[in-house]
Length: 269
Image 1 (cartoon, rainbow, N blue to C red):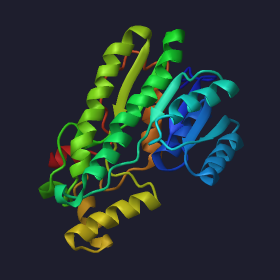
Image 2: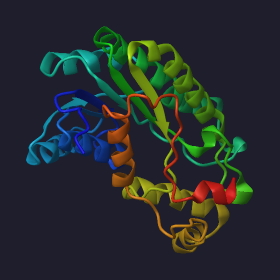
Image 3: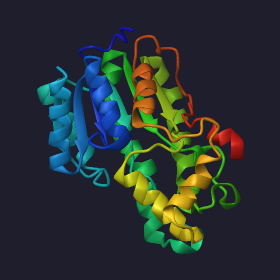
């Protein structure tokens, strides 16, 4: 399928690893000029090389998403090489698991800054160019906690920070969909289920297993039983949906919250 996005400029935060990298590479395969944003220069360079090896165009921008001054710079650097962004993917650092008593005010502030305020600054930087073109796509990588808080009795780990901040990010996404729609800009959220992203994925679930006093293998085996497809997802299964939501054909899809979780959420919410 021709997605109609060849030549579009796409900015992907967290674009050098995990789900973000899969999206960066998928957009590159579909002809986008990809601006890969992350902190680590080595991973950035590796991602750019991977996109170019498949015939795509890409550039790297090293930035800390908690430094809100970085967002206008990202747009400036992207515009200088490729033009103003048409597509913007916001993938924040996921909050760590833990109970309310585990976290300080500073932890709550940092999580809110990453999940909500960072997204606000990201959208504020990306939207003006899209408005001028009367076309744009904004996608956030969200969480099932945005609609129904994760409960310990279901997940076997506490998730206080995500339960607090993810709903706010979804509310902002839905608000932006309303406000940017008249300019031809769509705004959607993809909440992944359990996606195997390698090292970060393993570290997250190791922390969850430690919290409940189980070893990693035992914890993961129990979680697998809760997924009707009987497996964990892959980053490519998120990137395919993200690419479609950026497409010409998805121009009438906005304000949506599209879950990719192998049926897991319906088994425990």
